[in-house]
Length: 517
Ligand code: XMP
Image (cartoon, rainbow, N blue to C red; front, top):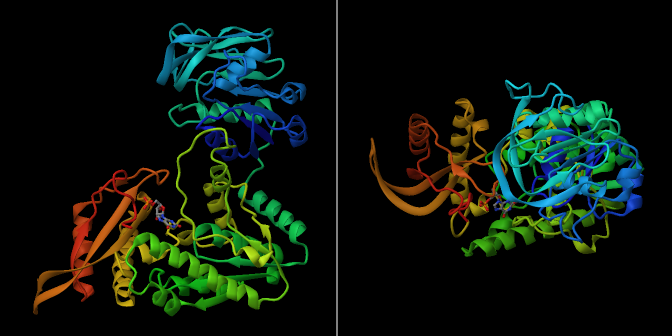
């Protein structure tokens, strides 16, 4: 396994994802983690991330001594290369030429790291690599034992290597997709240079997690709030495999779920997989609590608090439960620390369904805590969950509560469910579902006039929303084909008597948000 030391780069998580994608387990520690913790990790190799600081100041972040004492290969990226070079006797200087963005690097084929890896051959016998650069400082003098393995016009030393010790540094970012050969370079480092086998596969991950859960909870009973979303579903399937009947899930139907959603969750988990699931039909309680409330933030709070109240009541009914399972995943862990390890500044607001029932005094089991979303999906498939469920678009905790503008009423929710189901069904039928990141219908409680065969109609409006995004922090509205939108609009108006008009939302994020409330 590989240990990544974080110097505060925005890309540290990406390094970890690339390493895991190549089949090698890795974790991220902060650069100032305790020397003993670094030793105890038992890394087969280290990767030093980039970072915003400068090596040319006295108190810039340093590489832990344990890294160089371990006698295993080290790859420094950007700041990581500068820190390594500076600490091993080279010289780093501030450069007048800051490089940012695309660059072409001349790479020497004579290093174990870059041999035969190139985007273009150059007439002088260099390999040319297209890369993503982002740095101000540069290495001015090589440390002892290193040779130059890459250069650009403004960074004569854009890559350094010591094949003997397996120490390498690159000024560019191999972890981003703008560096097309980056994944190969990282894979070369972890597999060939560090000698890690590609054994971080879905099957092995499941076996490993099952063993760890069994060891952690022993014969104890575990409670899980199942929402039907990807993370809690995978936790349910995993815990069921690990501890069978020791697991009880509580599934709260708040009346704000999508069409047939509650039945599908019950069919998949209770009937099909034999998981203990308690279904709580709490629609009336939620709708009563929401009566007359139209402020979005208040609605969110009411839904979140009611969820905790209902969940708590069910939990109290269960005797001798010791553990609460949660679908926390690695990005949640990283983001709640503020960054990969608290070293970078990340702006992200969190949407959560509320907190934990605090007085429950349950111990926490979070088996997905070290996994990225794509890994969670892959092990979901490995555990036999249907692909539809594993690749479903995200759905907010407050559900349709934030997709019915203003006051939530059952009649509105029923209309919205029908319209949403038509939209999603058609997206799937036209192979568009997986091409958008999130798609749904929104209910507008305003009336609009229409005509149909049998006369004038005066009914409600549905807005359709579909977005493309990587991180949900920014998004562009999906440019769905007009023919498709036309077809969906006709179906909704023809098949749902309470709807007389359909609009398509063409707002990006920013300035709009993805949800309407
Ligand atoms: P916005 O509307 O903020 O949404 O652009 C970004 C992503 O977050 C989801 N979202 C929520 N998820 N509770 C959640 O669990 C919420 O209150 C909530 N509000 C928005 C939204 O669906 C989108 O994927």
